[in-house]
Length: 289
Image (cartoon, rainbow, N blue to C red; front, side):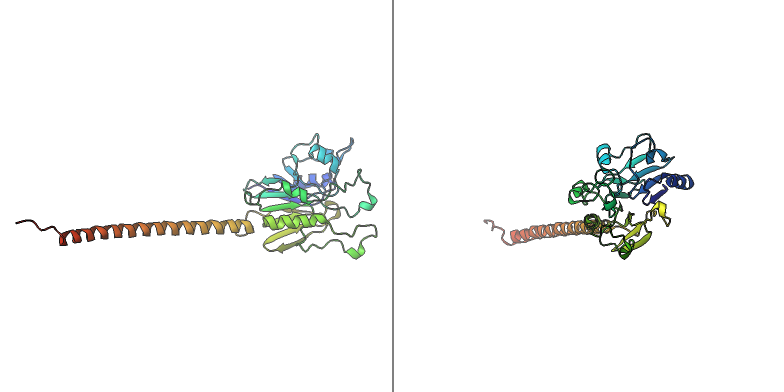
């Protein structure tokens, strides 16, 4: 079975990720955004990234160079086995489970950032247009979601708001409303995200969620991916199983009904033949003597 780990916000701290990969030797790394995509200069953060044998799949957080990300598709020159997963993209793991990726979130610290330089207000957040690139839930069963922030339904505890600096933005993040649509549409069994920089776990209507801490701030910033669990299935998978069972029962009833109909037709057909024979004997024509 493949060894897969999920890691929290990195913000370009690839030395810490390198040490984790060296120690744990994963085959895959799934990263929840604020990866550290600032691909400029001779000392760009990604130049220190050493995936070794791991394949790294990452999404965008709110702290990335979004204009360059849009233009280059997240390619990192000089680094292999590092794959950017656009919003709505799906990765099938070796065990058959499908992972849906949903990057993007709001920067509450934008007051100290410069638009177009290290803040991209038109690109950083999820919006309704992003949903057009998401797969048809009737064609793809989603088992796991990796996002940067969380749906509104998840009871996530961020940094206490009364302790926020005055210059932080207190307005709600519309990205969370989009993720609520994603949650209702796919009903995955598992969900991972970062953004809040605090490790916490919970469950919401059959979906187990995990918020990972940031790599720089201590706390639990990575976690092994749960192995496949046949008992804990996504709601959509259960609905498909129920529908398949219902269709099978309908087919069986249909086959039984057809068999009964065939027997009835055969019975009445034989009955008509017998009646005809009786009638023919009773009303035989009288022969002339």
